[in-house]
Image (cartoon, rainbow, N blue to C red):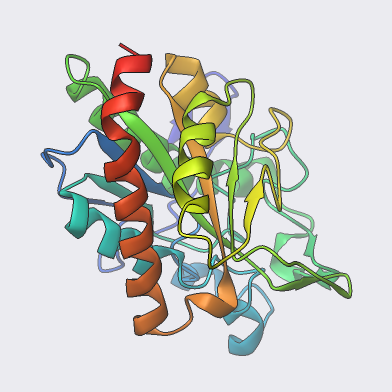
Length: 265
């Protein structure tokens, strides 16, 4: 493949028998919710081996968001909502990072060196962009373009580690936002009503245009109400935990849906 703008010959990254870069579930779902999962998988293309890491390292948070895809799939089923999931590890290329970011193809993550991400040629970088990053975001664009006459509330589903740099993180779930807080505020209120868990307001991470890509581009860039849902990983590592949080999120969405659609109509 030739990238004519950059004059770079890219390499074919995925073999024909490997899973696709993106999965779209229930594209014609009736819900106003549109679900995204940027870090759904820790799979690595065969041509890249294991990136110089072992299976335990790839299974950790540096490789993906454990439990997030399970919650997202269950939430999609409960709401009859469309869902777009990335197909490969964030360490190959992070689908929620701008391409200019140093974290787009991280040379290290959480202090862990990623050997196969060092010294990449322009062609090797371009192959990851063309094979994994662009198909994921093209799929989101295609889904949203097809819903242009329907209201959409964009929710990106993530998970976070219980401890970071030795500091416990007390929130069981957080709702993050960037320039527009309205949808997040409604979700925060709905989740807080249950009263049996701590909800983070723009915690553990706020959305930042220099760090995040999905919500700034597909949500704020389109003028769509959007928020990032972050669930603590120790609550969703089992099927039972994922089912519980999917139901809590479904209930929260049902509580706010009418108000949100009125506010953004």
